[in-house]
Image (cartoon, rainbow, N blue to C red; front, top):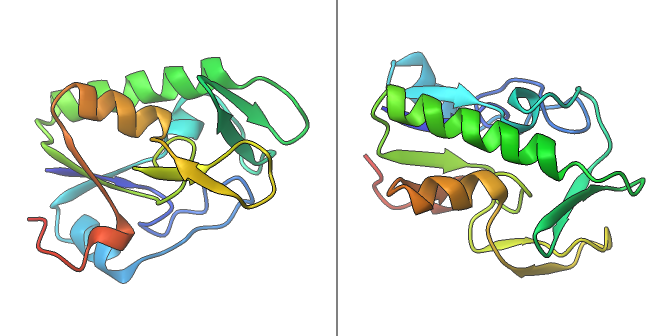
Length: 142
């Protein structure tokens, strides 16, 4: 099984209440090869919600609210799901403070990118789960 960002699977769970549906990810879910997850919702954040970005080890909403605990809680739940379903891979939303891999927004809310991993992506990789983004799907992942 593969974990996938629920927003890529077409669920309107992003901060703005929309999805970023990717037909390739939707197909993985429809064929039973993937499980959609939204770490932010699993961590207790509402949809829609303030956009959030990672700054150092903390996650802040655009209004300045520290939402680090919610992001960490959601990441822990996603890890538990991955372990329960023996998921060895994840395809997550690029640049997200939860799901991004290698490049994320820098915490300034200016659209500036920096090197780093989202909270959930980082936790999964620490536990041996391969993390990709939808931008990596041009190479075979399954």
